[in-house]
Image 1 (cartoon, rainbow, N blue to C red):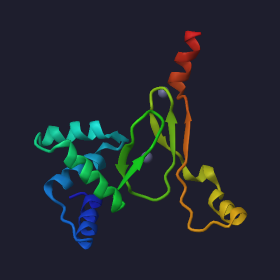
Image 2 (cartoon, rainbow, N blue to C red; image 1 turned 90 degrees about the vertical axis):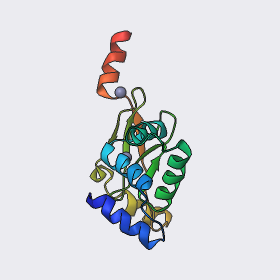
Image 3 (tube, helix red, strand yellow; image 1 turned 60 degrees about the vertical axis):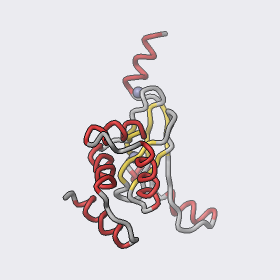
Length: 147
Ligand SMILES: [Zn+2]
Ligand SMILES: [Zn+2]
């Protein structure tokens, strides 16, 4: 069992939940994707393994996994929320407005923004959820050629 799924199992048990086969499958699908999945993409991958898992089960499971902090729900440019495993802590996205390619920003780029916010505004225990949107190199070049 993958380490993340294994520790997730323990977390669920501690909170009084069971890692049912369906929950396990949905969590694994998100974990293995290594990208940001929409609900439809999750449904497609889950139903490939077990066609009897309903969309409402997927929604309910996502809700639970999100509450437990195992899955992140991201609201990125390009419509619907997308999901990923919530490993690691701070987490920032760079998104292409055109093809919606999404990569994670290197946190060191933000320098000491957290401390700055704390110092200047007196807010504590800050979490930062940065989304930078623009056009990836490929889309940008294609757009230049069109004009
Ligand atoms: Zn792009
Ligand atoms: Zn992400």
